[in-house]
Length: 440
Figure 1 (cartoon, rainbow, N blue to C red):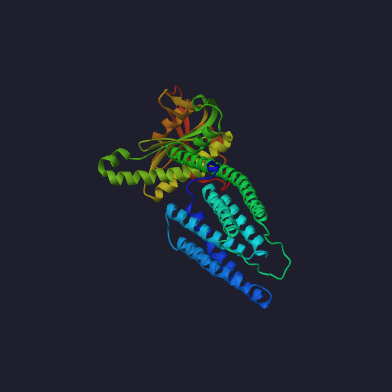
Figure 2: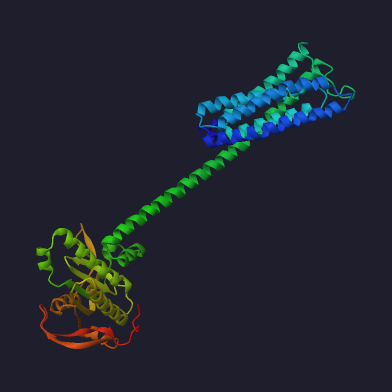
């Protein structure tokens, strides 16, 4: 049997929809039968007692189906209870349908067959093959029983319109032939309903699998986004995006390019560590890093690393925006950091260097990080501790690139550790020469 094409068990929603149909349709059918009595009664030649006999069976059966539907709708029912209820409702509906056969020789026969065939098809397609098979067998059994009882003389049907010259069951063979046609109609309906059900279930299953696939993809993407967001807390967002978009293995991402490097650290941090309790120190550092990070991101800087209270920041890595643009962004970030820190009563020193460096992934087989190495990085790192409190020192190349935008005065030629010749350094003023000339 075709049970494999139907998901089990039938969902509660399907049962509730079925119950809603029962509660809605059966009262309309009962009302139609009651109103039809008036039409029959208006014709003096009609067999009104036969119609009344039909109503005496039809109306209680309809009422039972309505009550079963209402019972299913008014509370949560188990799958087993719903199946039993549907069996009872089908039995009652089929009894009232076949009772129309008492009106032999009228259109009620044809209407009853149509309604029963429709019920078989709907149950087979919408619910499942077992309930559909039950409806099929019950309908065939009831029709067969009526024919057997009438041919045996146990019951006698009455024509609704005896005066009409309509075909009557003149012989047992004619009645059996008619029954054969009725049963054939039911079987044909069952076969087509089964075909539709299989196609429906196949499409339903395909849609379910598609939804599951989409749900899995969405879940994977959400998980990926969550991981990327967590990664952004530990790495610069620009570096994360660059690694995600690049087809190159991150461990192979190294190249020589011109960048601007910024180093900053708090003045008197060692003394603060010794005097502040852990909670106050944590709050102070978080404020400091928040201000530095906000300024960096506002001007496209890449936070390379935090080392205690020190910050290393890159401009031009992982993606270059041009030598002058990078230097301008770097200086503007430094000036903004100093302004922000003054507002929260913190003081920092900042050193900036511009020039060539090797940018990419460096580290061991177990751990790597995206950073920059080279003379430019070392020069900026050496300038930072020599800067006055709350000031920004830049090297000569940075001054050449940004000196037309920011006021800079010669600070001196400084002896830097690791450098054979003195390095000319400039101190940046607090205001740009021309406000808005930088490309932010």
